[in-house]
Length: 266
Image 1 (cartoon, one colour):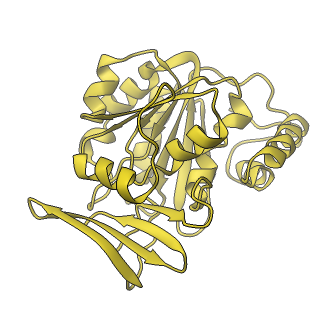
Image 2 (image 1 turned 60 degrees about the horizontal axis):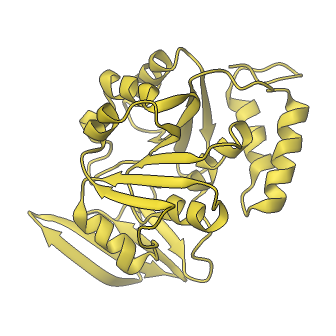
């Protein structure tokens, strides 16, 4: 969820309603967006560049490549419009991605309106409860992505201490989690403290711009080389390969996390 709340939709192109809850798709200025019963944008795709990441927080999540370039298995809880799975499927063919979403209508809309590829050997979408799936599949993900919102915000069972403990247990010994949080959420500090506890304080926060999406990274072990010179060099190489502002995100890490003039501290 981007947190952006549009005052009006230029064009509504789809609505699916069940049990009083709707899944809506709108288009404005060449950008197609997903909404869950409100004007809040849950996911967006630029029609002229469907494989790129339109929302800044989704590009921020891809900063995992700076710390864990050898990830081969990604588990994502929350599909939305499928922006990140679509990006990974297109740009990172070495990665296998499993996505879990509890809402079958969201899955259907991601496929019908947001160019989410069909399941194959590199992508699998599962209709299931994300919290339960994590508990039943420990130690399998090099990267765990949590981006799960409904019309009211983060579901309660996806922000408890037990849930974040399951997140830590779901990633491999050298793996990490990336979760999208909303900075103005009154419970943001509580969620962050829970993540810090689950990941033994090995946490970084990355504000991704206005509005206030914050990507929080939790690491099972501290990355080996956190010197600024090394991070900037790796970011420069990544930025040449992918349409993402890696160098700018490195500076945001510096501005929002403990560090010295020489290195980032986790």
